[in-house]
Length: 115
Image (cartoon, rainbow, N blue to C red; front, side, top):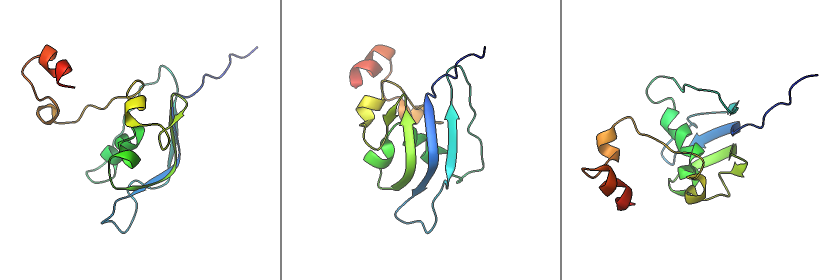
């Protein structure tokens, strides 16, 4: 008897993102899934679309950034093109590479209250 296959927490299907000033999508045709318990590293050279891809996971693309998203991104069963970033925030978060640009107050209490 084999164990049941767990449902993916994250699924990307043929995802491409094109910014308004770009001739080509970056990233292009990305597909993968992340299962419960997996640890994943998104690695690549500067400008290859790592941050852009991360913004598709939390819904900032297509909802808050002017970029064309093709393909499908699902997080915990939610299609990010249909769910709002607020709804998705219960399932996915993003920490930027420069914490000084992300943290705006001097204490944890003030930071949480800032939202």
